[in-house]
Length: 126
Length: 130
Image 1 (tube, chains in turn brown, purple):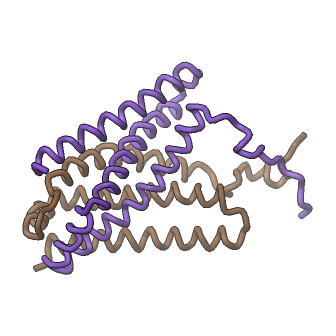
Image 2 (cartoon, each protein chain N blue to C red):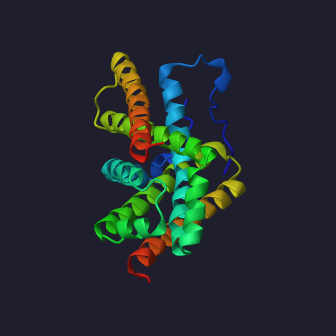
């Protein structure tokens, strides 16, 4: 028995109403995060209990700041793509689902900008 | 548009937990935990922009025993999600789909995550001399 409506079949999209862009972005950011997170663990283990001077000296090398920003961008993007699917799976009512997704997407951008701004301030600020 | 009778999946509780399903939901749970970890990273980075006292306070919170337990959990989540993510990429490439392989790589992922978490924690405490 065909469970999909003719319109749904023609569109060829799933329950998320979109194509492979989500899947592809999730893989790309995932691959990027493999080296980035391993670097991050290694870097953080050197900053356990550090004071601000040591932390600023670490961020201030530029290389670390750049890697941190890459981690933030890839990490926030990957996180919101994953959480989006969690919401789509568990929140069934259309209204709350849309509101949750809007909050998630806007919140992810907000957090990413706050983090990037913090890294830049620590690098270039007084 | 007329509403159609869509198929519903059976309730989760009727299934016996298997390595496939348990590792799958663990991937999702660790992913959600790591998204929460991004909030801790935000707290840590932003506190540094508020000066030495604010950063010292954040370091104290993160370094408290509760903070340390959370970090261990995030560390395990990261190693697990990373290894299982690579397992997913392997499936995306079309390999390792047969049940014996799924089982073997699943056990491998868990062993990797546990071993890496333990050795990282060990190294960290060795370095800070705690």
